Image 1: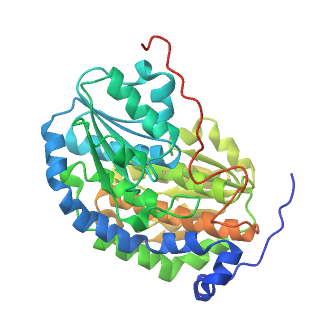
Image 2: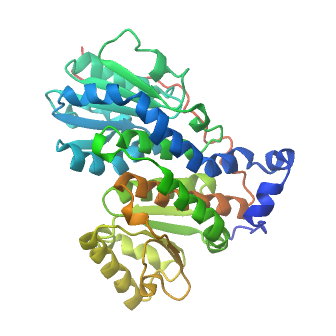
Image 3: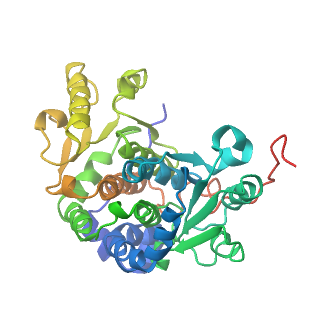
Length: 393
């Protein structure tokens, strides 16, 4: 295994105080701004934005879909993984996250028949899958209605279907249209907006914004320190927090340019093979549930790891965290009031922690958070040929 050189990374206050020109030279000006702006943007998404789209959401729910599918690609489909359990619990109809690519390659095998609502999640709304999936479902499942939630008012998802009554669009505050390659504020605001499809899940974001600000004030430098020197990282979450774990794992993989190998798994799934991952001296990040029964399962798994002397370097995120679950060399991100938040807003907090770990790891490796894996990854996936599945006219 190649040992990656480590760079000394200043604490957050120093990074923030650097002139914009220096931040741009070091390649973090956009990413840092976009991570830090999230509390302010959440207040807008859950406040004036939600109010502006309340009539649209009520009309979509009155349509009484038999199925709801959240679709997207990469981080955008992880929004679906996170929010689907929240929406299903609130609305009482089946809700699934299906990658847009699956709707292109084998739509008949994943899309249910009947009256449905397809919710397309996208930062730019310009990726080939975004438009291709909507076009395919419009053509071959005409009884489905569509809602695009995007950060880009000029993107194809927001502009292409204005003459089709089956398609509506919600465009978020322009600040959420992240300029960095990696999705940070776009991800959390798209998740928050998607959760508001269930009227019972909508709530002001002042509480979750305050917790994010608490993380910045108290925990960020400690997160930077614990992220250093780890070439593997595993993220655990249950239900919607598994979607947050998948997103956090992707952020670490992207921002480290692949130099940190990541895995996301559910707590109960971790026993069934993936626990072998912890034979490596890597980082374990655990997003604890606020549900008492779920958290009991999660706590049992972490205690089992203690008994097996696995995963000693941990970040555990939750409220009233038992020190036994963290271990002697771990970090408890203990946040009073976390479990009083709506379930979707709790996921914003978990994702926020994952973003900071990836950001600092990127800088420690000497990479640029705004443009990691330069020459490999692009902010918007480039055009590629779309092929009709067998049987499509």
